[in-house]
Amino acid sequence: MASIQGTRGHGRIRGTRTRGIALHAVLIVGLLLSAFPFYWAVIMSTHTSSEIFAYPPKLLPGSHFLENVRNLFHSVAFFGSMGNSLLVAGSVTFLVLFFDSLAAFVFAKFDFPGKNVLFALLMLIFMVPAQLSAIPQFVIMAKLGWIGTMTSLIVPAAANAFGIFWMRQYMRGAIHDELLDASRIDGANFLRQYWHVALPVVRPGLAFLGIFTFMGQWNDYAWPLIALTNPRNVTLQVALSQLNGTHGTTDYGIVVTGALLALVPLLIVFAIGAKQIIGDLGKGAIR
Amino acid sequence: MATALEKPAPTVESLPAGRPRTGLRRYWHLYAAISPFYLLFLCFGLIPVGFSLYVSLHRWDGLGSMEWAGLSQYRYLLSDSDFWQSVGNTIVIWALATFPMIFLAMVTAVMLNSAVRFKNVYRFAYFLPNVTSVVAVAIVFGSVFSTNFGLVNALLQAVGLDQVAWLNTPWGIKIAIATLMTWQWTGYNAIIFLAGLQTIPSELYEAARMDGAGPVQTFFRITLPMLRPVLLFVLVVSTVTGLQSFSEPQVLLQNTANESTFSGGPGHAGRTMVLYFFQQTFDNNDFGYGAAVAWGVFLVVILFSIINWRLVQRRGED
Picture (cartoon, each protein chain N blue to C red):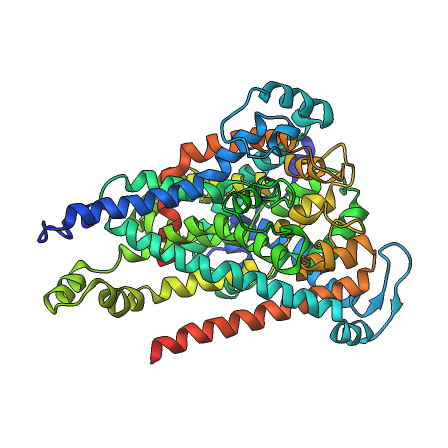
């Protein structure tokens, strides 16, 4: 990808240097704008509430971070909520990877009656907005006794149209028919083909889907807000929102400290998969 | 153990030789493999969507018995000025966020495409806002736009301008929400545009330079037309997601009004369509009307997406 870029502009040496500097200057401004709210969050998490709202504003980190962390742990079940978030995001990611890749394998490599209709239905489902099913989903889950538990978040998210579609596109190119034929001659059944032939070659695709799913679940807010009716047993995002909303006036030092700590697991996942995510995101759009 | 041994032999072997196996017998493992998604969809997608249509034809508080209401929920929806205010709010916020975002994303992508060094550093940094949760972002932006002590007002004060009650005035609220969305999605879309730019053959640019085209001309004659499919993708995705915004206004404004955390701030200026749906359903426990609102939202989103799609496509034909 990057090698194409290097060739352009070689003909013009004059002016290239100043243009390059101007270009990077603008790009750096953009980078600072992107990064500033993160920096500001760090500033807020290291000051007390009264320091945050002083004039002129404090632009350098303060010394109250540990105090804010202590207050955070006092005012909200932070680790309990983080455990819930890890449970939900982890289980959903695992289930989505399994169910979506299995279905995608079928759609990508096999023929069977009704295949096209089922796949068209899948794409249609892709477009149904969440709030249309929110009320009945809530009612059904209340009947099942899932409301207030993490089950209400995990089960409906365990397989999704986007992932199946995405993995199917990926598998069509990555798994060669000769490989499947060879394994069939060797007597491998369907599950063996899935496990030993398909999965090993689509690992990068799985990595993208896994990271994407984990991040989406970790940050999910609207449905957890409705479904988790016990305010002491919630996910991290709902806990943060409670902390922001309950006291009328927000203690920004504490809330933002929580928001930063909640970001840590996500940043770790993102840092591991950033190259994959950013690369594949673009490919998906131009396909 | 004994009973297991007495079971009849499995289907495949028991079939007479030569007779073709029927569809279900032959393909059952494939249907089984794709079934989880369809089962989940049946339980939490299709049945709910049908059920929500049924609910919207009733009066129901979610607990007691349903009472047939015919189309009266929809008649009320058409005359409900609160609903139409939320439609207006949503579209204004969407426009305030989307047009600057697409412009900035495209400019960023074009610059990234011509910058040779540090491209990966830029891409990583520009993508970071999108990784962060809306809740965290809204909390930070809530403090930045805070009226009395917020950073934006401190800046305004520093340069001698009047302070603005951002989260207290109709336009302030909308601008704050739109700024948040623009910040979160510009980098994401820039990376998508960048991927599109990288598929444009460099010979086209060479040819344009031979013909003496300047950078502006090159952009409008080559880059923009070649980028149209990607632009369409970005626009449709931002329309579908932007018109269903919920978390941004909910977290940003949950403190500012007393009546409900879904009320969208003073004067309901930040109450989007989906916020209104949540308020009617889960705060007022008016499940029947909530379901009608949900269908209204669905129709508005579909209509608006089609209009946008048509607009961009038609320009391409000119």
